[in-house]
Image (cartoon, rainbow, N blue to C red):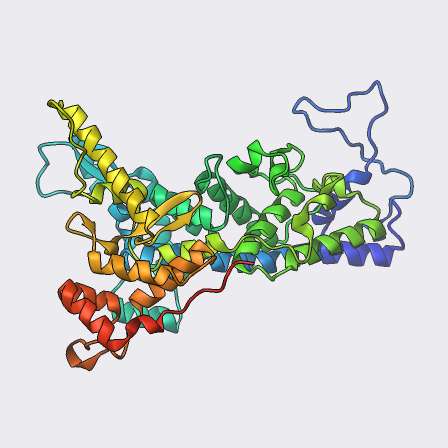
Length: 498
């Protein structure tokens, strides 16, 4: 290889190191001529210690500096993705309990164990139980041990403040700020399946049935953690096969026209293009107007011409520009983002749980008697029919996310929807002609949860929201107070679609 004069070569090697640069000149090492073996016994291609004609050290340095530019840009975007996930995971868990990460029963990280294993799982017990009990999973115990190391090392004024306020341990919204990206991604994997699916659906990472694909999102977090670590340690990302293979969500696997369909290709799922595709897709939900990933792809394409390498070396398919996701003005539907934020605002029931709550639903009468199984089936049918009736007359707030429907729990009491609440919902929804359903749900929640100065105040004169009032007085008193205060006039009608 042409290394230039001795002074230049020595300067380059002292600055970057022989080993670090070797990854960039590997492609320019000659291959053995047939019939000599082209691959070794482990399947790796054989390269000789001689170089192809024209190989030179200056070109290798240019590749290294290009790769450095890619790493810096990758790191900036990854930082934004990581920061967003710290918030979303902490917010989702924090609404349940400020120390949710220390309560495996809240995470759903429990399993039933035999008596003789309980001491090992929970530590020393004052008395052995007489029946099988639930204990934290091994995965949770290992996670907590790793997290505790991060928490003990945490420093800073904000850490001291929260320790003084909450005790020796940090609440979840602070804990997510001191844990590594790897610990954060593992915490996501320990969350309840429903919470994982809600987060996945928020980012429109969908399984084949339309639900949030929690497995794919967990895989993406692990992959991005791997790439982040490579960038942090100045590793090579150009012409690299990454260790973590990217998963394609279920929707992408069944639809060749899906934005993420290329993640099913073997030549993409462990190459830079696959990583960029995932980062672009996530950023469209985190910061829709941000085009940093598009700028990075443009930078790679420009430099590929100048440096003489093919985009295919980085996993880019020949038709990659045809994917609309690389358009600078491309946006995803924002309704899932809004719907997920609504689920974080209040306790919600899934459709099956909402139907179960409708205990006043009466099965239709039939001649003759029913078996217990028939009675149960008839009761379930009646509950399903009652929920459909509520929806037909638009008296219940419904939030749809990832083709899963949720219902704020405050709407139900004594086995049915609260009558006064239903009347309010019906009147307010009637004003929302041709508005996006997610925006209608947000407007309704805003009205129910926002303190209104005209309503009877709470103790100490503090303003109460309509929802607070509804829980404190009779329905008759609630209706009278709402009419007298003219509270319905404060409802903000969402804009029409289109």
